[in-house]
Length: 401
Image (cartoon, rainbow, N blue to C red; front, side, top):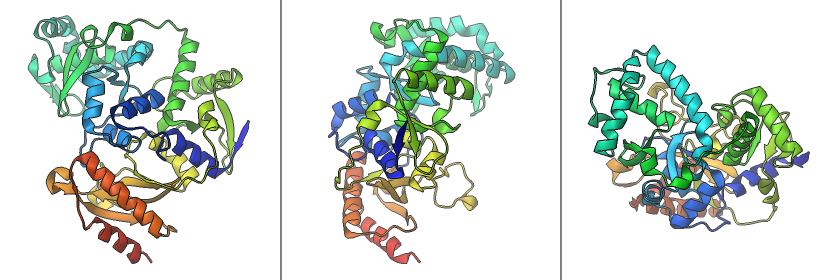
């Protein structure tokens, strides 16, 4: 059992995610390296100042641009859209190993569809596959068969429900996107052959693989139910506990005790090896709302003292901060949070609101790092950085009681 201080736990997480920039990841190759390390990032279609998956990568990769992610997904096929924690983007090499997850999701999807009056979609699975086989890449609206009915997130025709089922089952794959509109094609025509070859694992071996993989998505996790352990298999407390025990016995993961925390923690050996205790100059990063680091917000609050809630779906009158608020990381501390104006409307990077954390002294070095982070973020968005941003941030520091 490894003993970690709170500070070491924080620094281990920052280092694993390259949020200190020490790995020097840059551009397309840097994005590829991050995805190799984390395996999965969460997808969300909202685009205020970049979509979630893009925001995850920009925080870790210098010079990252949204087109890099698109290239890795829809040109190189290094990545694939699929269900992991929720709707995610993950490395295509893992696609065969995800077969048990797709099987579980298909079973649940069928029951869910039948419960919503979309059972008709199962009568046209072969028909939809034949249409796509002949037609090629198709969106949901390209195959409008049947009467539109409510499907949870809005109305959908049975043919659309059939496509969603075939996607969940792995028969169809997202081959491209126009904005957030997905184009589907037969999986064997999208992914290279080496990404389609079956992986034979016993149920226990799969549980071990999946629990270890999910641990690597964050790096260091406690064994408590939360967002980071969301989903099939890993969300089962008994199965997860058994897998963590087996992996620990084999030395594939490291059990940890973190100062001040009762719950046991686990980490990949590489994460523990990365704890150096050096005094690298702190840098500033803007963190995505659904960033891997933020998956277990209760754990982040326990380790960093930073309470974060994503208020996108909170009524305006009940919001504490704003609609789309990004945490601000400085070194291994969350020092602030800010809400950007929607870039599409503002035409530039403009700070709508900035809130410093209690007890944070906005030193000259910190403000310099924040200014550099804003410039970098504007380059990522390919827009100008509003010259008034630093005045807003400095004023927020002065206005604190």
